[in-house]
Amino acid sequence: MSKRIEVNNLDVYYDKFKAVEDVSMIIEPRSVTAFIGPSGCGKSTFLRTLNRMHEVIPKAWVDGEVLLDGNNLYGPGVDPVLVRSQVGMVFQRPNPFPTMSIRENVLAGITLKNKRISKSEADGIVEKSLRGANLWEEVKDRLDLPGSGLSGGQQQRLCIARAIAVQPDVLLMDEPCSALDPISTLAIEDLIDELKQDYTIVIVTHNMQQAGRVSDKTAFFNIAGTGKPGKLIEYDATKTIFENPSEQATEDYVSGRFG
Ligand SMILES: Nc1ncnc2c1ncn2[C@@H]1O[C@H](COP(=O)(O)OP(=O)(O)OP(=O)(O)O)[C@@H](O)[C@H]1O
Ligand SMILES: [Mg+2]
Image 1 (cartoon, protein in one colour):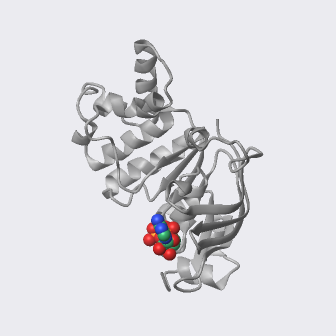
Image 2: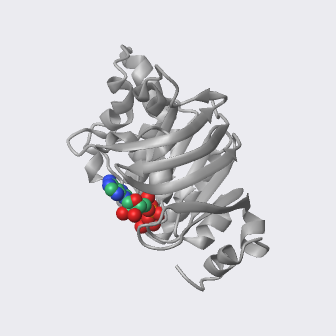
Image 3: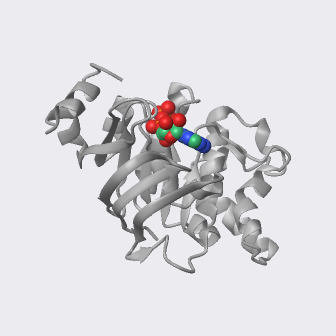
């Protein structure tokens, strides 16, 4: 568990439109990396290339390399479905499967992988994943009720439980708290802090305080104008990005002068 990500000269396209240009970066295991930058600069697009979710969109493609512990995710013969089980994703809006129970939601990724597991093994995975997502105590007596009956913050933790149930190496989170209240947000941030013991975590956030609180390193992306590709402007220790960035654009963004 917990692998190193190395991105080399990655360009990301939607058909002919280049949305992200020439990103290279190394993301260390057992750390939290925040992606920040103005709307439309390509944070979500770039994030989705880290588990091959990008190419689910028709005519979307990439040029360049993404290595997971040295293995290129875009190498010949690599199965994108396998990649997505190694690199899990949590989305902006909690998206539990509405017709499934809490228990079925946690096991959804495992069932998709078509692994045959016993009832007791499944029970073990459900408890471990829900404990890992800090949700067990709140739901242990209603595992067979619909996941959609939980609060927003609980649903997001359920989605995190679903993501970690398959034992990924990396967890990608695209603005996981933007639909949550401050208390639920803090619960997710505490959880991220715990999960980084076991996973490589990448989080997109518009909340500068959140980036400051949860991340070890921060990547600032920017865009020169409409129709231009987003670029990685600066990538450094979070403290450096917020207190002593090298680039004027980073300084302007983190101090709230634009974006
Ligand atoms: N499915 C798509 N098809 C075509 N273009 C897209 C698609 N999704 C995003 N784009 C374009 O790619 C660029 C980057 O979008 P992206 O969603 O990655 O930005 P973002 O930094 O995540 O923005 P936000 O902070 O608003 O979430 C934008 O110009 C956007 O319009
Ligand atoms: Mg986005």
